[in-house]
Length: 226
Image (tube, rainbow, N blue to C red; front, side):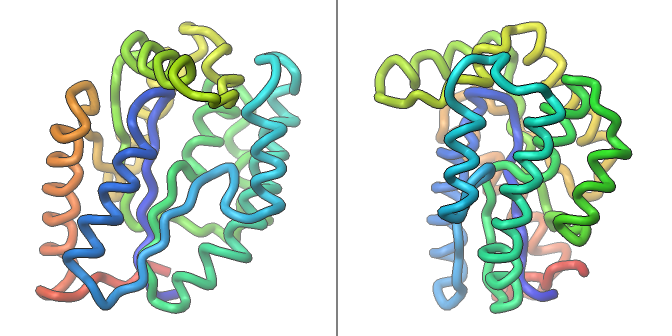
């Protein structure tokens, strides 16, 4: 498979959506002839967005963790088959706001669902697709939840179901992401996201510059590792 697959991960209020938009702008200016796609999970297709609406709205305890996991993987299977894989085969750069790591952390490590079971589900539904590089935007639980609350209060955004799971849950989420970043240090880049969006953007840009310089000649983007 060709193309370049970038994912952004992190807890609530870490700024993933903002940095995904900025990364599109930066790579678009660096590689103007390259197709660049920004997408998100859960979501990315009409069907997966319908699943997203079920998952991110309503009461925090409306689903069992196992149900959450199955819905996440179902949405991801649609997303990969209809958006991500076709784009990578066209040699596009795909920037995804959350991917498999979020399921391993939110439903797996934080809710104590067996990781091996989640890996088996993903192997069945996603054929083992893995990002080339994953940016983990790390911020304290308190700061992240406060940012998320401000965002929710200032808009009509009703996607607050996961935020309402409480600080103890989100402490497990942060710990889980940092654990994955250590385990998969070959593709994870941990970014301090506690500062301003401009400061975080600078960290992300520096990391992607380093990544491209190491793995590709000037003026090109590395192929996706199959």
